[in-house]
Image (spheres, rainbow, N blue to C red):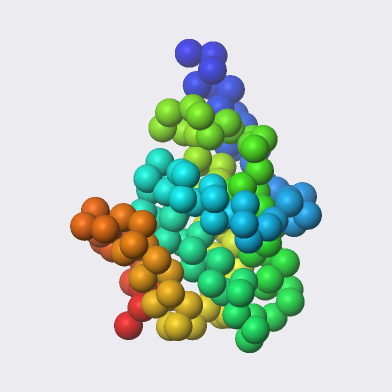
Length: 144
């Protein structure tokens, strides 16, 4: 029971913006792709899609540098081997990663266009196949 209480306490104290800033130096495209391929099913459709959306936004030449720094920090945190909440913990292991990804997504929302959404959507279809259900993805982040 203590473990659950400790994790809930850590979640309440977590500052996604601070975590993003602290992880910028750890981002690499190769590490991100490797982690996503390895953990996509555990992370879930929503966070996998949102992280891909950030990834393709990062790669776009039209994305402002400040948005790219935010994205690099979020994706860097996702691939860090050490997390606030260890990824190996069932049910709660990726909650900190999810919070960072969602926070970054809303910070750079104005940089996301339909091409990026379509790229993320197509990659998700390859990763999840018939299990890819877009129901839990917010409509504003889906391709038209």
